[in-house]
Each structure stands twice: as C-alpha cells, then as structure tokens.
Image 1 (cartoon, helix red, strand yellow):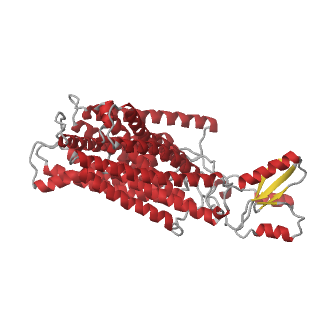
Image 2: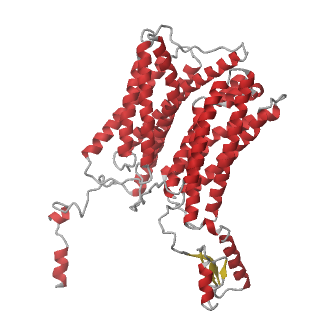
Image 3: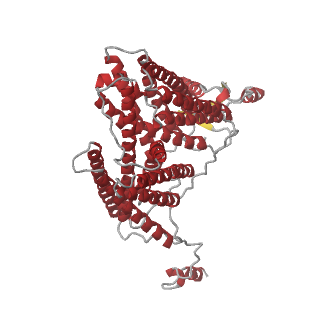
Length: 599
C-alpha cells in the first residue's frame, strides 16, 4: 500500500500535473518572468555590468545637458535657447517612448505575479508629486500663453517645449502611480537604460527650472541695488523684442511664471528620486514579508499642530512684510532684515530643541532597529545630508564674511546666530529623522511589558522588566509577595542569579541607564510627545521652505558677503547652494510625514 501510495502521488512524465497543464492557478501562480538560464553568480555579474554601463550613459547625458545649460546662461556664441529646448524636448520624447513601451508590456502581462517594493512609492509621496505636477501643468499653460502673446519674435521651440512637457508630466505621473513599486525582472538591461535616462532627463529639467528661476531672482536683486543707489549694475533684459497684446495680460503671465517655478522644481526632483528607486530595484531580490500599513491619525497632536500652524502663519506675514520693504530704502531694508533674522532665530531655536528632545527619547528607547536593505530609505537619508550641505555652505560663508569684514552694520550681528543655528538645527534634525525611519513601526500594544536581557554573567541571565507604571504598581506587587522576589529599581524588576559582586554592580548600572527616561514619557505618553514633535517639525519645515522659494533671500540682500567675497563670486555660490537648501526643507517635511505615520 505504501508503494502504491507513493506511485500515485508522483506525477508521470508528460502528465498534465507534471507539465503544469490544467494545474490550478491559485495553487501555482505564474512567475513574473522566465527563470534565468545563467548561474546566479554570472547573472549577478552581468546585472552589475549593465548597471554600471547605464549609469555612465546617464551621467554623460547629464553632463552634456549641463554644459549646454551653462553655455546658454553665459551667452556663449552659437548657443541659443532654441538649442537647449530642442535637446530637452528630444530627451522627453525618448523617455515618453520608453514609458509607453513599459506600460504597454505591463498591461499585456498584467496577469503575471510581480514582486513589489513595499517601501517605495508611498501614497503620500505619490499624492505630493501629483500636486506639484498640477502646478507644473499650470506653469506650462502660462508658458503657452506667453508664447502666443510673443509669437512674432519667439522660436517655435518655445511653443513646442511646454506642450511636450505637459504631456510628459501627465504620463510620468500616471507611470509613477502604477509602477513606482515594481521590481523589474525581465528585459533588465533595456529597463536599466530607460530608467536612468528618465532620472537624468528629470534632473536636466530641474536644472533648467533652477537656472530660469535664479536668473529672475538675480535680476530682481539687481533692481533693488539700483534703487538703493548702486548705479554701475547692468540689468539683464529678458523681454522679447516685440509687442504683446493685451499688455496687462502678458505682464501678469510673465510674473506668474516665476511664482510657479518652485513647484515645478520640487516636482522634477521628486520624480527623479522615485525613478532612481525604480532603477535601483531592477533585478533586486526581496523577501516575501509584507510591510504593515501605516495609519496616519491626527489625534493627540494638538500642541505640535498649534505651534506649527502658528509658525506657518508668522512665516507668511514675515515674507509679505519683507518683500514689501526690502529694496525700498536703506532703513526699510535694514528693518526687514532684522525682522527676518529675529523670526528665523526664534523658529530655529524651537526646532533644534524639539529635535534634541526627540533624539533623547529615542536614545533611551530599547526598541529594535530595522537594518534591512532598503534603496528608498537609503536614498532619503543620503538626500537629507547632501542637500543640507547647500545651507551649510551659505552659513559658513556668512560666518566667514562677518569675521573678515572691516565694517559691520548692526543687522549683521543677527546674521551670526542665524547662520550658526541653521547649521546646528539641520544637524540635529537629520539625526532625528534618520533614527526615526530606522525604527520599527509601532505595532505592539503599550500595556505589554517586555523583558530585556541586560547582563549575562556566569552562564546566568539577568533580566529587567522594562515597564514603568504610573502608580508604581510593580513595586507594590513585589512588596506584597513578602519580599522574596527580585529587587525593584525605580519601578523596574531585576532578576539576578549566580552573579558575582562586579556582575551585580553592572546589572544595577544597566538598570539605572534604562531608568533615565522619566515615567511620564513611557508608553503612550512617549508616542504622543514624539508625534507632537514630528508634527511641529513638519509644519516648521514647510514654513522655512516658503521664504527662499518665493524671493525672501537675505543672502542676496544683506550685502556683507558681497563686499567680502565680491559680487559675482557670492552670487554664483548663492545660485548653486540655494536650490539644495529649498529642496532640503521639502524633503525633510516629506520624511517627517513618513515618521509621523510610523509613530
């Protein structure tokens, strides 16, 4: 019988069960692609080679595009705006072809089971990029209207470019909504080239927007200097040499374009980061564990939200007053600068204190860290540190200018603590965010008490009950048992067996170390404090994104750095560093939102 059973359970060669014909698809779902005929080591080496070749291709495209951007910016002979827009349009069309091919192939193979990276393409991130994409499309409509008004003296490429960019934006947002989580396991070499081409195309579009917005800000700064009496400054005239009708509408469109550039800049950089994660996930092996869904609740954050919204309202008021007074006269400009520095110093002090409290709570928390490989999380951390260097460069430049200047106006003494606090606050905030994203999500009820191993001595384990009851119930329970139980330290139970005097002292020291966190910051209270801190920092980062994005830039207007370093060198430093500083605030806000949902 045993032999007959074994024969019946083994399918014969060529039978439907052996070949898969007629098998239940629910039991054996089809794979995402055919298995690789190459050994794993050979396949991995080829994957690394394809990744290296594609990255070099993308870097060459990016460098060539940057050189063309630079040539147009410095008015190089034989290079015009038409050449730059032709290159950007060609790159977008090539990316459109790749995305259409990928979407079509995915639709044809929609029944296949595809692995997903649960950490990539979060809903809040896709929602953010959708919002910025809507503003980018509105910007494209403004550019089309601008082209129609000045069509007599503008090249046709200036009308084709915004139309292509709008189509590119629509399809790219659809592509990222549907495929940002994909783990690509077929046509990997082709997909690597298509993915990296998309990354650097968006980076070139970002650089083009940054250059246009910086040229506009620089021209406004020159106009303020002319108003203040500096007569040897040449203004750049970007107005086309023909009339536009109606004149009022054309003027409103030209001014509205530059107020929409900050949203376009954020859209392009967000799209490039999401596409980079998709490129890094090509051929990646992922485990089958499902990530718990994060739920963002708004309860219990009244204090943090109130302080953050107050900071946001104060920011809008300060920016409005600053833009009204700066450049009107010398006294009004100085009062506007002093107002901005006092506001920023206060806000940065509060943010730094909140970040220190949050980091201190994490330092005393025994929660395990998530050390698994995650391209999206690693990219977020790298971007936080890399983009913070833009503000650090400007701050150290201001500190050096204050130290080296021969004469110092009164408002420069407010610039010194402001620059120092910018450095410290971003340092503290980066530590808080990076440690927060590496924490495991809250999934264990707060009333469950866990036993932590604190020492191992003489083959015996010393255990500490890491719980703190508001009514000191643990100590009361131990005392009611007649004192035969283990000793209690600050409401924590310590079990010591077989330890010598030195080992017992080590155990007591470990208990004291874990008891540093006050009882009112244990359990659910700790979560509420962290959620309030995160909500406050989230709103504050949005507040600090607004001033530089909409023209409130004291680095341009205080004049001290320009005297020490020279006008053109300092303006170049500001134009290079400011886009990274603006992006840092928005990226930090996005990271803090993810942290808030995890707590």
